[in-house]
Amino acid sequence: MKATIAVLVLTGALAANVADAATLDFQSLGFGNQGTSVLVLANATVTSAEGDLFVGAGSIPNSVCALSTNPLVGTCESDIDIVFNSLVSNLTLQTGGFNPGDSVSFFAYDNSAVLLGSVLGVSSNTTVDLTAFAGIRRLFIDDSSTGAGFSYGNFDFTSAPTAVPEPATLLLFGSGLAASAYRRRKSVRK
Image 1 (cartoon, rainbow, N blue to C red):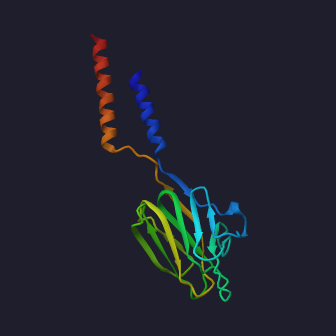
Image 2 (tube, helix red, strand yellow):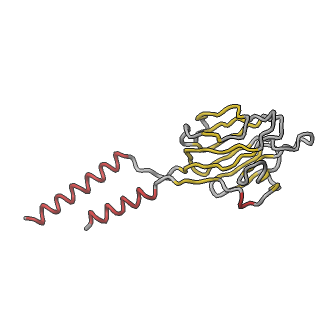
């Protein structure tokens, strides 16, 4: 009985540590200029390097862009910094609103601000695939556009579990449970 309860507790602990599929939800904020350069979402903080953040620009409904404060520009040409609340993996997103002259690069950093990798010179409406980089804490979007700039949306990723038991710990725990159950059965049969 105790072994069964221990196995159920272990199973519950493992299930609680499974990575969760997630997205950044901009649509719930409402369409248009948000009147701020910082948006705090349920799973990340999004910051514009220059002007206000605008939701729903371009061709992607669930998107954000950072408005330039340059009166000669007045478009989505500012850099964006996204800091996730937990480490993320399998990150993809879409760029939208491409105009000739638009170009943007993406830089993924880990928990220690070490560069994990980058996708450079995106110059079209496309899906940006950052799935090669696991354990992303921060995504810096460097917009070097001379057109209208990009909007970024449909951020899909998996959030890392908060605490994953080491495989060796699980193996030892499982072995201990099996040995305990074996001894109990052996003593009952005598």
